[in-house]
Amino acid sequence: MKKIALISDTHFQSMADAVPLVERLRRSCFRDVDAVIHAGDMVHPDVSLLFADLPFYAVQGNMDNVVPAVPLQRIIEIDGWRIGVMHGWGARHDLEPRLLAQFAGEKIDCLVYGHSHQPVCHRVGEMLVINPGSATDRRQAPWHSVGLLHLNKTIHGEIINIDDID
Image: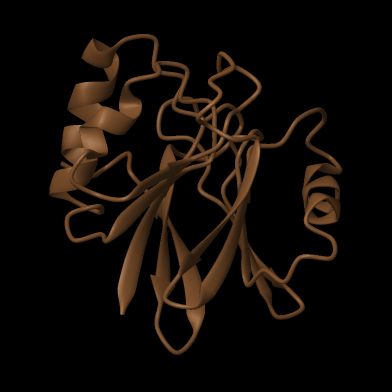
């Protein structure tokens, strides 16, 4: 069984902002993960260094500076599961259908996205759709959040309220 950390919309302006939160996450809900997926809007380009000991997959968000090595959209394969990742853009009201359309014709088992800062975890047919929300800027969400993907004989996700973790 694999456990994948999901994070998005961190909007870190400096590593001084990023380090305490990432260390807190790594001590708690990300303690025994096998990889990390960042669904965009890292803002600070060195966030991946905080996960240097793990496979780290990221996509560019609308607030990220264009970095050629970081794609706008990608499909990651882990243990036979195909995970589509894209940040998103524009209004929240039809964000998910637009992102699903971006992967039309691709066989993916899960869509991971960000942009709205709203945690989401549900199925569209057989596909798991998950947005981890934001660990730093909850906007209208009830709490700051991250996500986990659990990959085994099935794929399932969970959203974690991080406001009360140590």
